[in-house]
Image (tube, rainbow, N blue to C red; front, side, top):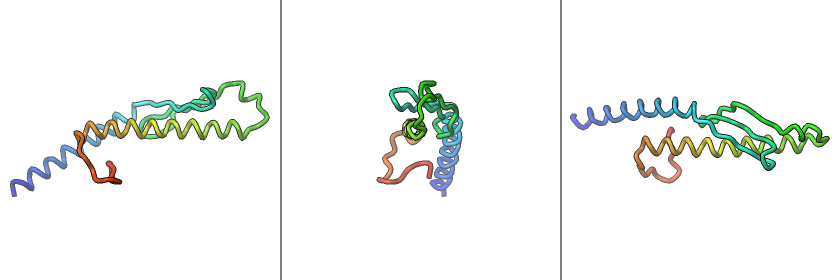
Length: 107
């Protein structure tokens, strides 16, 4: 039974570390860009969008689809960076724990 007690303590410690990580991810900002910097999207590492900046020269464009595509591309770039930041934080918590392929934390 002693092993079970240790396992429960480890699970509680991991849960506390995960909650702390979630708090840190909320304040880590990443910026995705597209169109050579003409569009940028800022989001936190939890993929919550914070800001969008669009170069004023794009407003003169009659092709709204270009602007829309650039916004989507910038959002996707920011999302990839946010996921990388999250994985970096997870690696700190798991201490390099090698998880089976396809298994990601948090579940």
